[in-house]
Length: 128
Image (cartoon, rainbow, N blue to C red; front, side):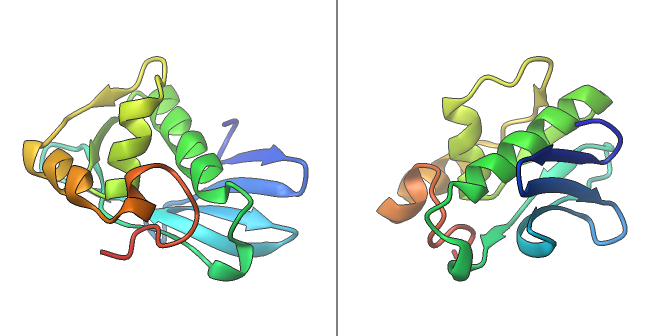
């Protein structure tokens, strides 16, 4: 992600530091986001991901989280995946250079998540 934006066709992923989230924008409309907050050790904790149901079925959550993780890696920051979607994404995708601080309880929660959240998809993302 160059600067704070990555664009793919009519889909753009933007880091919004003021709101503490990465946003996926489709044709100028925010279609979803993955939140982050910095912990006491300076790591980025990702607690929640949401995609508007009106935009489901496009793989936007995967695009969003993938671009966010690539950007975090490029910035040299460390991720603490708490959101079950982010946990599952990182379990199934290699992001070169990404530093991850795994918390066992979050991995366990992701494994227990309802079927629709166990693998990256759009519907139900982040609704725990």
